[in-house]
Length: 93
Image (cartoon, rainbow, N blue to C red; front, side):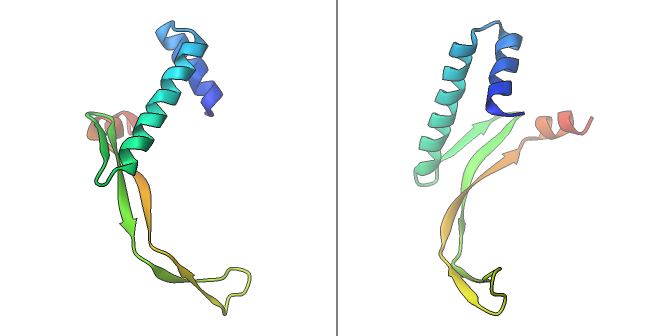
Protein backbone atom coordinates (compact mmCIF):
# COMPACT_ATOMS: atom_id res chain seq x y z
CA UNK A 1 0.00 0.00 0.00
CA UNK A 2 1.40 3.37 -0.96
CA UNK A 3 0.52 6.79 0.48
CA UNK A 4 -2.27 7.48 -2.04
CA UNK A 5 -3.89 4.12 -1.27
CA UNK A 6 -3.55 4.78 2.47
CA UNK A 7 -5.22 8.19 2.10
CA UNK A 8 -8.07 6.62 0.13
CA UNK A 9 -8.57 3.78 2.64
CA UNK A 10 -8.59 6.11 5.65
CA UNK A 11 -10.91 8.57 3.91
CA UNK A 12 -13.35 5.76 3.15
CA UNK A 13 -13.14 4.37 6.72
CA UNK A 14 -13.60 7.75 8.45
CA UNK A 15 -15.94 9.46 5.96
CA UNK A 16 -13.50 12.40 5.76
CA UNK A 17 -12.44 13.96 2.46
CA UNK A 18 -9.24 12.73 0.84
CA UNK A 19 -7.81 16.25 1.06
CA UNK A 20 -8.36 16.44 4.83
CA UNK A 21 -7.12 12.88 5.29
CA UNK A 22 -3.90 13.60 3.39
CA UNK A 23 -3.35 16.77 5.44
CA UNK A 24 -3.79 14.75 8.64
CA UNK A 25 -1.34 12.05 7.52
CA UNK A 26 1.21 14.69 6.46
CA UNK A 27 0.84 16.44 9.84
CA UNK A 28 1.35 13.12 11.67
CA UNK A 29 4.52 12.40 9.70
CA UNK A 30 5.83 15.92 10.32
CA UNK A 31 5.19 15.74 14.07
CA UNK A 32 6.91 12.33 14.34
CA UNK A 33 9.92 13.61 12.36
CA UNK A 34 10.24 16.70 14.57
CA UNK A 35 9.96 14.68 17.77
CA UNK A 36 12.55 12.11 16.65
CA UNK A 37 14.93 14.91 15.66
CA UNK A 38 15.05 15.95 19.33
CA UNK A 39 17.56 14.34 21.67
CA UNK A 40 15.88 11.25 23.17
CA UNK A 41 12.69 12.02 21.22
CA UNK A 42 10.07 9.29 21.18
CA UNK A 43 6.44 8.91 20.04
CA UNK A 44 4.56 6.15 21.84
CA UNK A 45 1.10 5.03 20.71
CA UNK A 46 -0.19 2.54 23.27
CA UNK A 47 -1.34 -0.66 21.56
CA UNK A 48 0.24 0.30 18.23
CA UNK A 49 3.93 0.89 18.85
CA UNK A 50 6.77 3.29 19.49
CA UNK A 51 8.78 5.44 17.10
CA UNK A 52 12.25 6.20 18.46
CA UNK A 53 15.88 6.58 17.42
CA UNK A 54 18.93 4.43 17.98
CA UNK A 55 22.57 5.36 17.61
CA UNK A 56 24.77 3.38 15.26
CA UNK A 57 28.48 3.27 15.96
CA UNK A 58 31.06 4.04 13.28
CA UNK A 59 32.28 0.88 11.62
CA UNK A 60 34.24 -0.48 8.68
CA UNK A 61 32.40 -2.02 5.75
CA UNK A 62 33.29 -3.52 2.39
CA UNK A 63 32.89 -1.81 -0.95
CA UNK A 64 30.42 -4.00 -2.90
CA UNK A 65 31.99 -3.00 -6.22
CA UNK A 66 35.51 -3.79 -5.02
CA UNK A 67 35.20 -6.54 -2.39
CA UNK A 68 38.80 -6.24 -1.22
CA UNK A 69 38.45 -2.52 -0.45
CA UNK A 70 37.24 -1.36 2.97
CA UNK A 71 35.05 1.71 3.48
CA UNK A 72 34.62 3.75 6.65
CA UNK A 73 30.95 4.06 7.64
CA UNK A 74 30.30 7.06 9.89
CA UNK A 75 28.28 6.91 13.09
CA UNK A 76 24.63 7.83 12.60
CA UNK A 77 21.21 7.96 14.22
CA UNK A 78 18.53 5.71 12.75
CA UNK A 79 14.77 5.94 13.24
CA UNK A 80 13.17 2.68 14.41
CA UNK A 81 9.65 1.44 15.04
CA UNK A 82 8.89 -1.14 17.70
CA UNK A 83 5.45 -2.70 17.35
CA UNK A 84 3.23 -2.87 20.43
CA UNK A 85 1.72 -6.08 21.76
CA UNK A 86 -1.83 -5.40 20.51
CA UNK A 87 -0.50 -4.59 17.02
CA UNK A 88 1.62 -7.75 16.95
CA UNK A 89 -1.35 -9.82 18.10
CA UNK A 90 -3.61 -8.31 15.41
CA UNK A 91 -1.05 -9.08 12.69
CA UNK A 92 -0.51 -12.67 13.93
CA UNK A 93 -4.20 -13.68 14.04
